[in-house]
Length: 219
Image (cartoon, rainbow, N blue to C red; front, side):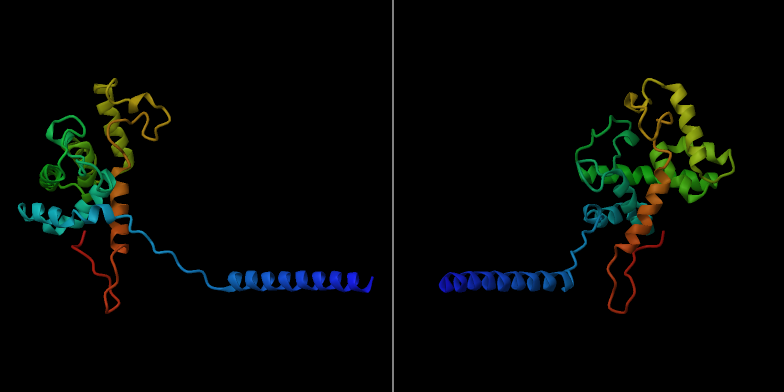
């Protein structure tokens, strides 16, 4: 009987020690500072095109708008696909006809130059020019006739006018749950999104040795 009791006691004591060790291990890992995960750069896909954008803009003496075009590309494609600037339609082609990033950048920059030049002539604000990359120069004319300053409400009004011209084409693919519906010509929130990208792009730039961020050209 004594041997059995001793054996049971040793078994119980062994389990008690084991549970104690496991509890200590769990407490250690709970209290240890977690290793921070490396943040992924959401602009990595478009930043690789920055030199090409800057080079193409230089042809129009518009290098200072490089980061604006990076933000535009982020909104258009995140730097993915053969037409990262989604410039096919601005050239009068069907969507995604262009399948060469270099050509896409050439056409996209040309389109930006066109809306920028016309926007300056019409004395509209810069958000209108950004929105016109998405909606075309007609939007600039419309805004110039309505105070010269972009707003999502004006973008909706312009979109509605275009939808009435071609309701079968601009119908959001028949999806009434689309956030743009019934303003299915362009994206009335486009300028807001691009400007947000411009701000996030600045925040994504690494800090230099003197504690300041290395920013590109001013917006």
